[in-house]
Amino acid sequence: MRVQNVDYGVLSPAWAGSQTAALCSDAAFCQAMLEVERAWCHVLAEEGLIPTDHLAAIAAAAKVELYDLGKIAADAVGGGNPLIPLLKAYRDKVAEANPAAAASIHIGATSQDIIDTALMLVISRAGSAVLTTVKAAAVALITLAHEHRDTPMVARSLTQHSLPATFGWRVSHWLQALAQAGQHLEETLKQTALQWGGAAGTRASLQDFLVRSGSTSSTDELAAKLADRLGLQNPLPWQANRIPILNQANVFAQLAAACGKIANDVLISVRSENGELGEPLAEGRGVSSAMPHKQNPVLSVLIKNGALAAPQLLAQVYTGAVANVEERADGGWHTEWEALRGLIRTTGAAVEKTHELVSGLRVFPEWMADNLARHGELLATERMVAHLAPRLEESGHVGIGQGKKQLQELISRSLTDSTPLKPLLLAELPAGLITEEELTNLLDPSAYAGDATKIVDDLTSTYTDWSHT
Image (cartoon, rainbow, N blue to C red; front, side, top):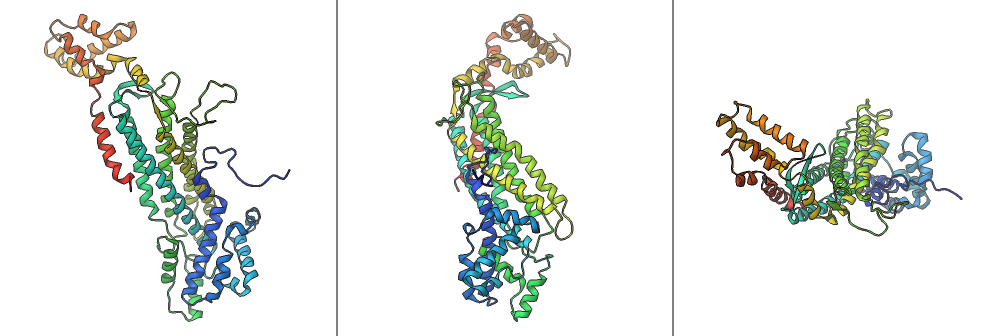
């Protein structure tokens, strides 16, 4: 059996089969390179710099399905980048229809122009799809936060129960992180930029070509027309400046972190001993190969998988930038490609799964209430201490600064001896310091959620308009 040399993502379920993976595939990238070459020929033809009758053959050959990408990849070893063998194959294909037209391709350009610009096209297209999904996920989170605005649950810090809160409050923080990262992506996508400088970034070959052709056009004007045709920004050549690449990589890493936070929280809450949440049910998903009773939280597992991979991919992009030297890095530039592609497709797939997760998340308020009740009145001891410590000191029963210490000792005794806290306090505190009714109110966890509901309202209103644009 012949094994195809294609990366389907068999060992990468975090991104395999995702929309973003398809937008970042080898075929998508090679198609982007062909489109850059084709668009440049159109610009030159519009300026009268190449014959317009060359364009039909040039356009007809700019289809990635016409090329053997396995051979392109293997042949890329010879020149150190994939554009070199693709360009040769493209010229050969054009020459089959119009031999003269082959000479009109790649005038005044260099491999880095095509590769960097094609990467920007891939970022723009994949990023736009990711942004759409981020906004859809934000809409789902807003709905979920409103629905559970007042659903009580326990907040946890350092893995332990801390204070009373609401599930809507937790969801609103998921929303805040995801929407902020999405807004950063939206702004950064506006900066996807053409790179067009020629062999050393000076545009010398293009300028010389214009002089020889007797053209009155400038290199700046031609680059601007190319950028406009491709839907990219048009800065001056930036091939030795990798900040444009780093800016793009950063926002995808932020999105991965935001998705990872949601997955982490869900993974804790779906544990059998917590039982607060359940992932959306889908036939065949979450099954165990050995234990039929299990319903594994596969969406959250894969989101977390992608989020954990993202920082390493971002670090590799930075490593390539740090290794950048002179006008084209000797390995640093090459180091960026796969890491950047990996970061985009991994993050994009995590966003897709996060959208599915939050859109169908099953919430079990009764389990949240049970978990909240496990520590019950102890969850409001912060409030109780704040009220009673000053009274103890003002009454003269303890010295200044000792009230909090005495109350903490009573709380510790309650925990150590498994003694109900309220009766212990009423027995040990000075008579008349506090009534039973007042103490009951102070220790009521449902009355100590602070601004949780207001925070839900404020955060959801902050991102409602943006998520619907």
